Image (tube, rainbow, N blue to C red; front, side, top):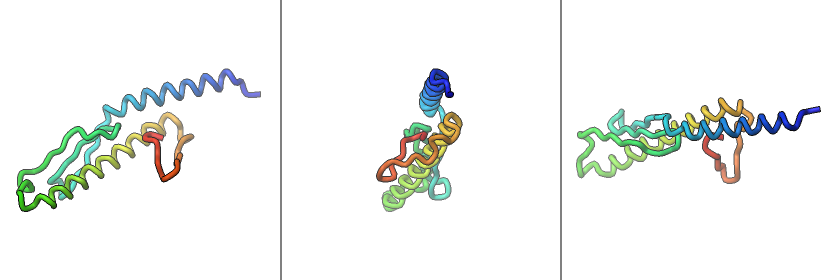
Length: 112
């Protein structure tokens, strides 16, 4: 027979570990680039943009639309990398138990 107290302790430990991992995501940094590195976006594991770097040669009024596209592409790449890194960190804790948790509308909980 499974010891219910032991199961509850394991669940509580996993919850605490997941909370610590979530808090640690702020320290993970990833980078997204576009235009051959002309635009670089740095984000953290909590999906927050930390910085945007744009090379001077792409900052011209006539290239505004191209620059906007490059920024969007770099941000999207950084967000994807941040999500992947957050998932990796949470997988370490859950041991894959939560892997592939899909909610309606393909919504995913970051880190799960």
